Image 1 (cartoon, helix red, strand yellow):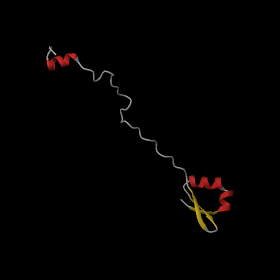
Image 2 (cartoon, rainbow, N blue to C red):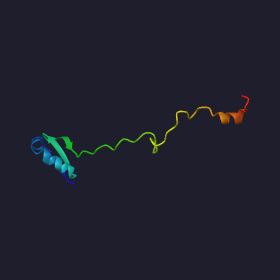
Image 3 (tube, one colour):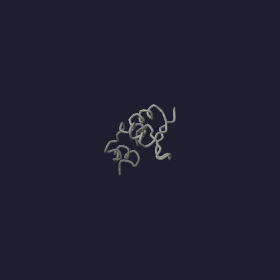
Image 4 (cartoon, rainbow, N blue to C red):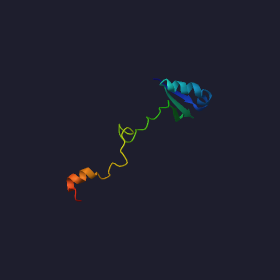
Length: 82
């Protein structure tokens, strides 16, 4: 990895070449009247967003009547004369 320092005019003139060097790993610094003002770096995409809901999200379903009363079970608990 090399450090490349260029002036503003040279950066404008050879921008695509400097971007290519940044992609190759070089550190490209842009100066304006001897003062460092910018740095050209390679773009690094953000990691994909994490899925919310766990690893089994979308593979499990719950029936609409999941919490409906079960007459047979209630008969066992409370007796038939309820």
